[in-house]
Figure 1 (cartoon, rainbow, N blue to C red):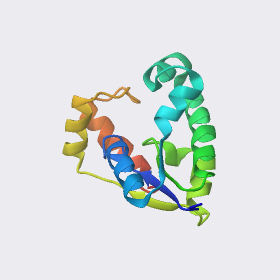
Figure 2 (figure 1 turned 90 degrees about the horizontal axis):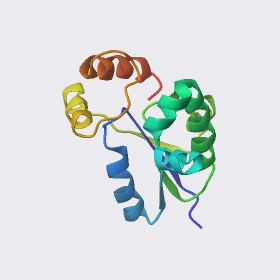
Figure 3 (figure 1 turned 60 degrees about the vertical axis):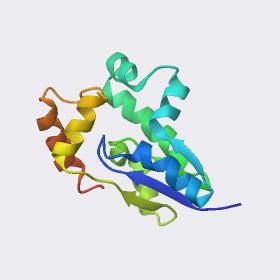
Amino acid sequence: MNSRVIALVGPRGAGKSTVGPRVAARLSLHYRDADLEIETCVGMGVSELLRQRGEAEFRRIEDEVSSRLLDQSGVVVALGGGGVLCPGVFARLGAGRVFCVFLHAPVATLVARLAEEPRPPLTGLPLAEEVAALLAQRLPRY
């Protein structure tokens, strides 16, 4: 059994969910998308979860689900953009067992991608300002 664990991290719209299956196929690993796993776990979409239960509860669930994914073997895991903010996830990323890959794109590219495939807003800021603010906040963790 392949013991590799590869985590794809980066801002929303960086391409983690697009690149992940390709990397997994190329390396003969399983692919897991943290957001899809969360949706399966709670029985609702991420947008609905954020709207109904708030960001704090979403992050708690994200930490639990994503940590469980990172504890597996033979996987490529596309983490949510804010997954690095979760204590359990961040600890696993820094423990040396997980090979972490940072995917990034210019803010203008991220904004264009998010405009095409909207995600739930996390701040009250306009999209371009939100992307820049979240990137600035999370960059040290990526």
